[in-house]
Image (cartoon, rainbow, N blue to C red; front, side, top):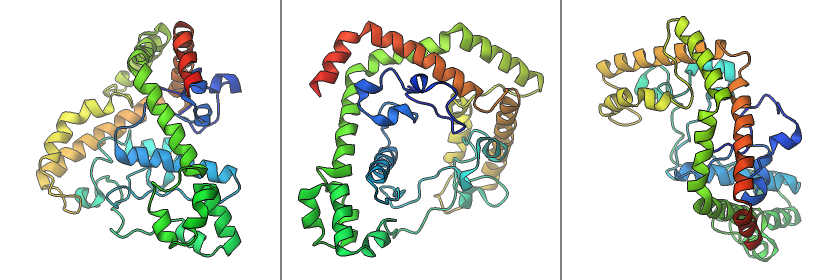
Length: 317
């Protein structure tokens, strides 16, 4: 995972200069100063969500209301943080969110953790009601911000639902700007992704990171629990989850009893390990703060070592 900004919501632990990745100017996105960005996600749902959030930010900056559309490509709700819990609350209830959000609530039943039931198949775009209640002039201005002036006039003659549900419309405006930004980001990682992989390795091999993790591990193990981190959680329980997944009969059908018993043991272990890890840290943001500091340190080195090719890439866009 390549950290461009901070993953924490507890505020920036560094000055503004430290909060901005050394790679931001080359990737070509303002989001790099405030958010955690990885190389472009391969999952289509993640790509859609990434673009929707960028469109919403763009529209808001232009003074227009826009609600992120969380409808995925299959018209099901994207599992996310239930009830928008804060970090400590989420950890207490869901651990790392690995085994606890691997299956739907229908599959796990009321006694175990699961992600919320998918929404009905027919989902209305959350911006539809807002657009339909606007005056003609205000609606045209909203379309101009979203699609650009040339396509806005044509769009205003079409049903609003058709325009909102056709994400390819909009070569300019916030949709067009977002597409351009995403294309530059994608091209950046295509050219530099392999070389950037060393940054994560350097962070993990940094003596400050190793020392910090050694102390955490001692603390967790002394509590009689397995040492698992958010980065290793999936692989740690992957084999067991695959056994359970093989018995699943769909997101709306409860798992067999033996699978539920196996899942209960995994969820209990996960929540205990995640809670112990959190208790062994001074603050919930401690690991993220250290990782951001070290990541930026090695990103700066990467920029220095590849300055000529990075500048060439930036000037070619």
